[in-house]
Image 1 (tube, one colour):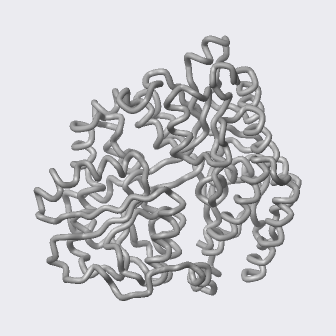
Image 2: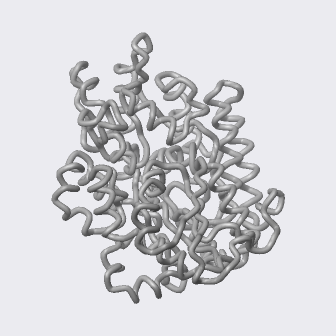
Length: 449
C-alpha cells in the first residue's frame, strides 16, 4: 500500500460523512459469550449457500445463531462502509474485499485475525493461498479478514454456440478476437447476445472489468507520480472499445447489468460469451442453477498490450472493531473459511459450488477436481498471474488491478462509472464522461503530490 496512505487515512470518513450512516453506539450488545451474531454479506451465490447451511451445521455445533442480511454488491458496499467507518456497530461480521481491508486495517477499524487463525492448528492457516492472504493483510503483516473465496477474472463462452459457427476460442484471446467472435455470434432474432459485460454503475461493478481493459490497452487511472490519466488516449481507446462492444453486441439492458444479471443471462444461454469473475464458474456448472452446465469453455482474461489482464479479488469475512462478540464472530469466520466448510458444501450442495480460490488443498480434493476440471486450472493460473503491483504497462502509485488502493477511489470510480454507464445507454459520450472523470481524478491526485 502507498506510503502516503497514512496521510489520507481519514479520506474514507470524508466520503461517508454525507451518507446516512448509523451514528449510534453498538446495537450488538452483550459480550463474547452471547449466542447471536449479526452478519452482513453480499448477495452472491456462495453467500446464499452459507445462509442455507448455517443453522443446521454451525448453529447446531456451537449454539451460536447467525442473523444474516444479504444485499446487492453496490448496496452492500455502501452499508458496510457506513457502519464500519462511522463506528456504527450494527454488525459483528461482514463480507469485505481486497480493496477495503488494507485501508480499514490502517485506520484501526478491523480486528486482526492472524492470532486466532495461527492458534488453531485445525484451521491450517498455511493452506490459504498466498495472494489472498497478502491482499487481506495490513502493513504489520497480519490478516485483518479471512478469505471466503478468491477469484481472478476470465472469459466464459458457450461451446455449443462456438461449435455451431465453426469458431475456436484460444486459451489466451485478445480483445480484438473477442470483438470478432461477438459480431459473429450475436443473434438477436434468437435472443442471444454476442457477449455479456457489466454496465451497472459502481467502482466494483462496471469498473472492475473495464479497468482491466484499460490496463491491457496501456491506460491507467494514475501514473507513478500521481498524474491523473483518465482522459488519456489509452484510457479513451479502452473505454470506447468496451462501450461500443456492449452497444453493438451486448445484452439488453446493459446499463443495468452487474455481476448477478450477467450470471443469469449467460447461465440461461442468452449470451455467447461473458467476461467476469472466475467464481461464477461454480454456479454455471451446477445443472440445478444453470442451463449451460457442461457446455461452458473457459479462457484467460482477454488482452491487448499485456500478457495477462485478470483481476485479483477475494470476498472475505471481517470483524469490525465495534463488535462486542469477537469470540463468537471468530468461531463463525473460522468455520465459514475452513476445509470442513468446503467439504460440507460439496457434500450437501454439489462440489462445483465449493467457495474455492482460497485454499491450496481444495485443488487436491478428488471430487472437486472432477467437478471443476473445466475451469480449475484456468482459475488458479489467473489468480497466480494477477499482479496488483504492476497490472499494466507503467508503474503505479498504489496497489490494485481493478481498483486503485486509496480511500478516494470508491467515490471516484463510482462517479466516473455513472458517466460511462450513461454512455452505454447513449445519453452521453465517452469523451465527455472521461473529461469529467479527469477533473475528479485531478482533485484526488492533489492530495498525494
